Image (tube, rainbow, N blue to C red; front, side, top):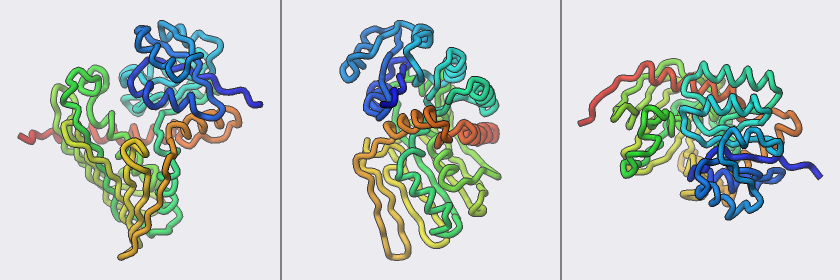
Length: 330
C-alpha cells in the first residue's frame, strides 16, 4: 500500500477549515496530519473531521515536524512568498493559496528553490483540476469550435459588511484583483493558451485597494488573436461568469469558479440554435487538486498547474496594475 502524503496546514482560516482541510482529509493518498495556529480554539475546530491531527502553536513548529511531508498555506497574501520559501527550506512540498506572490518576478525565487530542493511547489489554482475546465480548454485548443474571437470573464461579490477583512487592507495584499482577478485572468489563459498583447484597465480604489476593475484588450495564442474583457468588483452583488466566443460556437462555464458550492458544475455549448449542456455533479475540485499534487510527488509527473503558468498570470496582473487608469464612479 502506498504511503499517504502527510499534510500540515499553516493557519486556521475559515476557507481552510471549510474547504481545503476537508479536501485533504478526503483525498486518496493524503492524510491531514497537523494544524498550526496561535489560536488553540480555532485549530481545535479541525479536529471535528480530522481527530488524529496534531496541533502546533506556531508555523515554525509545524515546519520542524518530521512527520509532515507537505504543507498547505492559506495565510494572508503578503506573507505567501515568505512562508512558501521557509517551507521549501524545511524540506516540505508546498501548495500555497492564490496569489502565491504579489509580483511576478518573485515567483522566480520560488522556482529556484523548487528546482534546488527537488520538491513540488505550486499555487492552489484549483479550477484547472476540474473536468469542467479541462473540457472548456479542450474545446478551444482542439479547434472544435474554431478560432476564438472573444473571451469575457466576470467575478464580483460584496464584502462591505466586513471592513476588517484582509481583502480590504492594502498592507495584507488586499483588493479585488489579487483576490478574484486571478480567476478571470488565469482561466482565460488556461482555456486559450493565450497571453495579453495589449491591455487597458479602468479601476476604482478605496482605502488603498482596488474595489472595481474593468480590463479590456487583445490576447494572442495558438488559436489566434481575440478581444478580451474582465470585470472584478468587491462592493457588488455576486456574479461569476466566463464566456468564450469562437467562430463556430460559444460556451459558458456556470458556475465557473466555485463548482458545486453555489451550483452544479456545467458547460453550456451553443452552436446556432442547438444547445448542449454537460454536467459534473458531485466533483470536488479541491480533492482533485490534492490528489494530483500527491500523484506528482510520487511519480514525478508534471503537475497540472506549474509555477511557470502561475508566473504568467502574475505577469498579467503586474501589467494590469501598471497601466491602470484610476477613476471615480461617484
